[in-house]
Image (cartoon, rainbow, N blue to C red; front, side):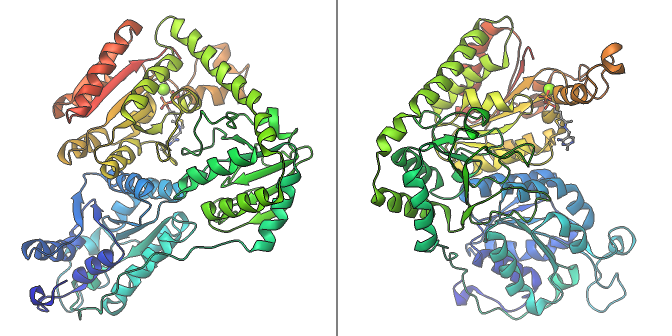
Length: 569
Ligand SMILES: Cc1ncc(C[n+]2csc(CCOP(=O)(O)OP(=O)(O)O)c2C)c(N)n1
Ligand SMILES: [Mg+2]
């Protein structure tokens, strides 16, 4: 910041907070406001008035939208995000989305406030609401502790600048995730010295030692049927490309189970074997679990004969209660670097890796043929089969080079298989509780800018979203996305789980399935009307192509589109 534009007058905790965000490299502050943020608004307003570059500040009308957008933005940019929420209530309202960010591994500094003086202290009057309504015993940092990586109170303005930076640096370290900072209102209002500013630099990279890599390269060079199981290799910068080179050059089959939550390998790769483990796990002699937190279900299901190598910077995820990996070897260096190292060390040992690669061709082609035949049947079936809808959406994704954000449940498996992905960062599954998806899609759109974003969602999950607040954000922030609802007018997954526990129970005998029916829902596309967005209801397969083309055109022209598609299951 140029010195001549600075004024020390009124420098306070709010200024320090924004200084620290800037020095963390934060370019957007996502906020769902409360009165504690007046000092931050002052700091931003001052910078804006003085023409000093400062982070973009965005007000959102719901905590889920603020946190969810930060998650989507962080998934694409891989940078630490900043979120302002209100006191304990705002934190609690946003907590589900913060938990989602924890699962998704998105680094963010989530902040909110408490009061320390409740109006009985010297200095500014915080307002009676802090005394009467907003306090929470133990402090807000105590509330956030179980579902964040780290949670702390910023107890003094003297430590605020460095503490916010420390929080951000912690959030950006593996396992990346949300941290929470309780910044009391009095600390934000407190007079402060200007800090000695220092930009946070990129984190150092971890590498595996040659000895560890060589031990695995030896196994890999000799293995006859090595396979990879991965959920999130593509989440690391360069992970998608590194995995592809590693698997294809060394002839290793790759399974992306349905628990995969991002694009890890092109579906068209000749070593891609689909999402089912069963045909391969017991045949494999070497299994590489690459960024795979939970490969098997039940957890104690063990491969018949394979040696297991776990490749992951943080194999034991601290936020998971129970996790069984059964590792025989670990490589815990940064992912792309480790895969490149291991690839080079294995190639150096020599072997007919091309022959090993062609051994997987049959499996890949069988998967592709099965995929195609399922699609043919679905396209010929009466009504709109969800697979047929996925096929049509794949055409859009290919034509528009779209990024897909998915919040479907029983359709999740078919979305992954039939929409699929070919490019890095082109698919993100929304993790955690339902209702964050529109926000995550908007955050992704904010990051990909001119890129096309498709959001797929079930009717139940759509109704969990803060729809009005999300669509308002889409409009106000000029973030047009294509929203497609796979509508079966029910919580189908509830019914399926019920039937698993009670296949012949009272619900079946009396055709009385509680927790399932959503038939009273209104036309969901009608939510788009107050925002002048494109809206359509479709149940006729003959209409689908036309409506989809109109919706895509609307999005490309700058308007969000809500397409409510009645699917047959
Ligand atoms: C916040 C939250 N509440 C409840 C649930 C439990 N839940 C999981 S799936 C589901 C139903 C989703 O319905 P829909 O999106 O229509 O998908 P379908 O089951 O029909 O495929 C519910 C209620 C949840 N995951 N998150
Ligand atoms: Mg449904």
